[in-house]
Each structure stands twice: as C-alpha cells, then as structure tokens.
Amino acid sequence: MSLPISRLAALSAASVAALVLLRAASFVPVHDVRSDSAWVRLSWSARPERIEHCRRLSDAELAERPAHMRLRLECEGRFARYGLQLMVDGAVVLVDTVQGGGLRNDRPMHVLRETPLTPGTRAVRVVLVRLDTLSTPDAESEGVATPESDAVLGDRGAREREERQRRSEEGIPPQLSLDTTVTLGAGRVLLVTYDGEKRALATRTGGS
Image (cartoon, rainbow, N blue to C red; front, side, top):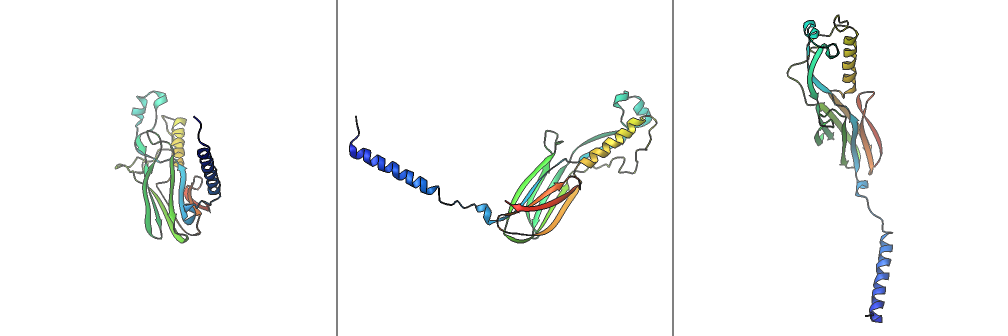
C-alpha cells in the first residue's frame, strides 16, 4: 500500500530538517573543561627495591652445597611498596600506595596520576617513601661486610657482590622528594617524572 503524497512530503521535510540540524551541530565549538584548569601529572616507571634479610654462610655450610648453588649470603625478601604523596600550597591533595607489577611485584611500578589545579603560582611537593622494612637488618647493614676475596667461592664471590650491587642500583631509592614552585596557566601541565640516571624526581612543563 503506497503512502499518501502528503505523508511522503512530511517525511521528506523531517529528514531534510534533521540533516540541516546535524550539519549545524558539527560547527558548534565543544568546550574542553580540562582547558580551564592547570594540572600536575605524576608519570614514571621504576623498579621497586628488594627488601632482604640476609645471613652470611660459613665455609662449612658452603661446602655442603653443590658448587653451582653456593652463595655467601643467603637472603629472603620481598619487593617494597611505596607511599606516594602530593601536596600543593601545603595542602595534601593525593595520597596513594604504589608497588611493582606482576604476581610477585618484581616488575617495574608504573605511576600515572593527575590532579587539577587552579591556574597561577603554586608550590608543589611530591614525596615517594618506601613503606616496607625488615625488623632485622641484613649482615652488611650491621657492619659485617663481605670480604673482597673469598677463599671458598673465589671469583664467584666477587660476581655475587657485583650482582647484588647492580640490583641495588637498579631499584628506586628508599625515599625521593621534590619541591618546586611553578606558575601554570589554564591548560598547562607540570609533569613530575623519575630520572633513572640521576635516581631523582624531575619536572617538565607543557600543554595538556
């Protein structure tokens, strides 16, 4: 059954009107509310520190173990969690706990946090502090340093020390802090990141 001509005309007119409105809407500027504020963005990846309780094995204990399993220091531990705090003009605006990825938290921790600010000159302080400690310090922290030469382990002892030193340097320090005063206009961003070479927090500014 065909539609009356008047009905077809009405439908055509409605379709044309809808297309005109859609076309007009495409030219209406969209306001980005993010552009009204300044922003602090915390963004970095870093490997968490491994917190260990180590015991120095005697020569007799080492002799009982297969050669490929001999390590002068026997250690147990876990990867640390860190408390993250952001303060602006003396007021705390962000508190969080961050840790490494993976089931054992042994992968790099990825931080990405954003906080809006009123544009202007702002005093910004960022603190990252290790939360985890062990009740009993390891042998080295107690002053019982591993000798430079090891009669039982030989070169393997030196490699063990080098490997422990390398792991220690790869981990993020127990405490980091950054204090800066910055003037930010609307839509501008203060980026706080981690400099792995300097092992310190660093800043950059730019657009959102």
